[in-house]
Image (cartoon, rainbow, N blue to C red; front, side):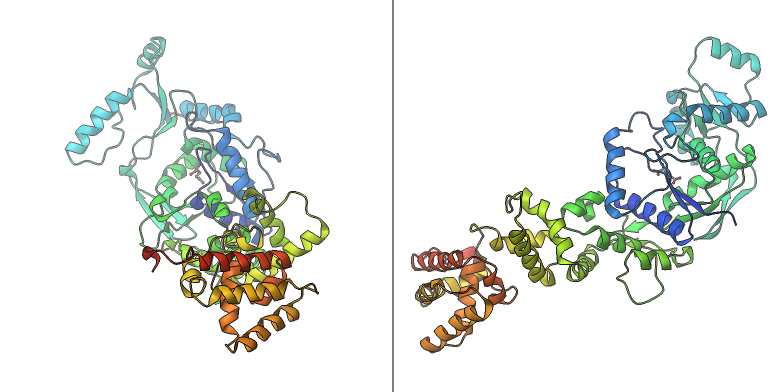
Length: 497
Ligand code: GLU
């Protein structure tokens, strides 16, 4: 077989949705697995809805996921241009050929007339489709209407009888009844080609061997196949990917949460985790292991592993997977990813000294075991970056509002403030010694101390945490909590009880 060539052909009419990203990923993984080429083609034949902003969003989304393209609008390639609005002459030629051969014709029906007739069909219980009114207009009639400047589109004369069989790599043979199709538009009144026309011409001219796309395009495929036959074009292989559902098994939509891929970046997902997660929707690697890096994904990806039944977008699973990636991630890398997020929250200065950078990496390293989203570093971990961190109601209720706690916190502050090296063992010793002197268990000092220093009841080893916070800040946090506690300001409100 010739070299595999797949494409992602988004219409730039909005954000890059997770469904689009899923399609792009599968087409890309297949090309990479096969050692083939991956093409990015922009299908902007919807003149009204296509925007530059959306084009930029497509680039950003794909790049974030780590999907690269061998040919495309920005990188060029042997079949440039890769933006359909720059290829209008090419479609015009093909439409001209179909008009010449009689497989296409001009249609002068107005939208109002079409709607009226469709309404009648619906009322009679017939599935609405074009009724063929302009199919057999004679040449003189066409010439007259054209002279009158009547707006027209071009329709494809479909094969009306029999069936069109699509051989799909995922679904097998799918049969379509031709009588249901109706002559469809291939050139709009504006002169622009429709999606059907442009996609067929471009997949052919760009030598796409495998059309991998979402299942919602399966019903369009018989129309494409008929166009290919009329143009004498060889069919590519088709693979229609299963739909993506929410956990309630309805089609994924805003009701289920974000559908814009980049919202997941903002929610704290790592791109490699998102990529892994998307790959597992409707595809099985054929093994138990679910955490697959890029290399493993491309090594294992086959269309045979793609499922016929819908895939589920399970945010719980995505979050779990992200947590696994965070645990395994290199702390230096995570510090790079987190720095802009922390800066945006005003929690980190712009220029980090080497020492401060080492500190940040140590903080990240300590926290990454317990986080599931990058945003957890910013929310749970805010006590590393600011004195203005919140006290969790549980910490207030369980520890900071207890009568005996303020004195203990003050005593601890006095001792921890003593000049000396600020290290894990020293901190631990001071805390344990105080507990011994007070004749209480170490927990009775450790827990209030954690609550005062971090505002929380749980977290990484307290001594490891404390050593990463300046000695003077630790002391002042203990004193502040003691003072607030004594003043009764840390008592939980009735709603928090
Ligand atoms: N522009 C179409 C879309 O965004 C592409 C469909 C296809 O891959 O053929 O849905």
